[in-house]
Image 1 (cartoon, rainbow, N blue to C red):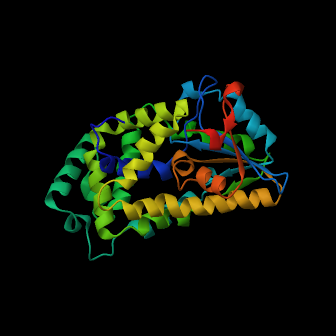
Image 2 (spheres, rainbow, N blue to C red):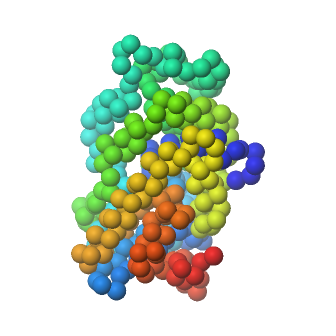
Length: 314
């Protein structure tokens, strides 16, 4: 991303995108980040696909290298099986995690500038901000991004995880890497100050939301790891207040996902695993952690001639 949006100001939008929606895909001309992970100690293989959120008709069909990896696998692993969620229970859980106690309101917890900006954004989206009064800032931010995304040409129903969930339903075992409770717990662990920062950043970047998403999508389609690391990870590393968010969103969850990969391999399984692209990037990402642990990683791309081990990549 260019310098018109400071990394700290991007983190709220990126954080909301990481959790809420399905993942966009690519067509045969594109090269999303895909690895084959294996171990000398077993015959197991994990195909690891990093992606971003939302999809578009023009992204399909997916590249053959991705579909081949899926068909070679005995099961599908996703962060969360959104289609299998009990929607009433999920909504109730979100309200339990994201609602203030009766004696507290959002208006009283926000400074005047943030509240004024929230009113402006609410008017642009056609929603009454008084409806947010009982909600904590993180949930307000999440709902604002959800509403904003409805105005873009990206759609969650066209996401990659939903695509593969539809293919796998009734045909392959579906493995969830997390629960709804675990994902919501990430937000619930934000301090009051971090929640306020999260909402403030969401409001500050509102006007540039679709542009930011397009830039990230462009880097994802090209499989440009450096651009993705700059766009996604840098947003959580810069400025005061971002360190704990990075730990909760990436570091701790990456460790759990690595453990899942290790378990799949130890059992000799073949698994096709789809996770948000931020989880495969950087020194603390799934790929780097597996590499350091001695597992074999091979980057796969639509161009067979460009396939190479992850260690050899700059």
